[in-house]
Length: 218
Image 1 (spheres, helix red, strand yellow):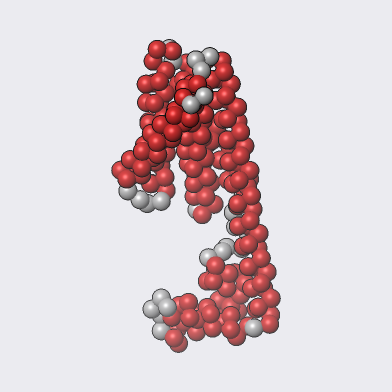
Image 2: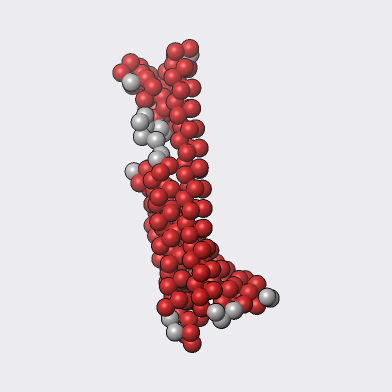
């Protein structure tokens, strides 16, 4: 479940970043020039750059997390050999803190440590399941495709819509897409959907205003 949630999180965040990054560039360029080909190439280039940047960032981040988890496991492997009693006490305290009597907690700790000492300690101390580390490639590909898909919303909106209506259509496409990513992020984080949607829409509007002003300066 943790791996799936991490992949979904990377996908939602990648999609949101793709939308805002690409629309920012599109608005800046469209405010500076009316050449449709220039606008399209700028947006497409930024979409690709954003997608691969998000993917590499997620890969590096999750790889670091995976390495940290493996290091913790190896440290606990050594501690079981050199300081078994302390590790046993840690497991016992874990159950005591959850309302189990000290005597029963010790019995549980001894039984678990006799059967699966390393699995028990890593689960109790770090909530790590042996052999179930986060996969950096899953997060990277999820972020890559999500950022690319998110960036397509504003890119297609401004490229395919009639010139006379491309601004309102692009703005509407961005509002709908960031509202969707806000809703999905609230579901994953068990937060308030309305708050997340409004927050994303406000951020989207601010992003477009800032980039529009930058484009008008040149």
